[in-house]
Image 1 (spheres, rainbow, N blue to C red):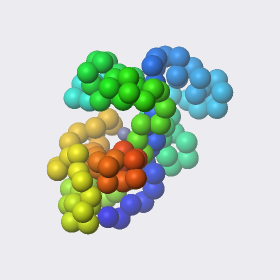
Image 2: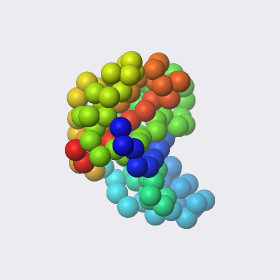
Image 3: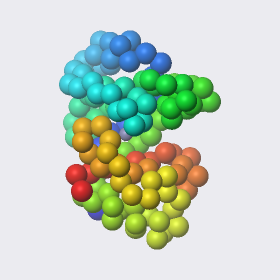
Length: 134
Ligand code: ZN
């Protein structure tokens, strides 16, 4: 599926403002964007670490995916995202290989990228996102 790098690591947090402060104070990263993704019921903050981003995710609705995740598992690593040139094709390829999909087709994620999730039941318990421009 032509994966080039880890695009980002998504981390579920209780309080975005406090989490940003921690990432800036402890690691010296600079938050370059804060974005609300209404569809996903989250507010996100981004940091660049080399070619990879850290995506902090604060839930805007306890019934949203991050709200439910935190209620069940607590804060922490939520998903890993691989950069691919074509999300549509990558999802098709994964399905052909027997991977259960959360998204049959890509949808719009943060930063205007196409994203699609693979089901953690098929990927050793790791919620995996594929993202890219196509
Ligand atoms: Zn993500």
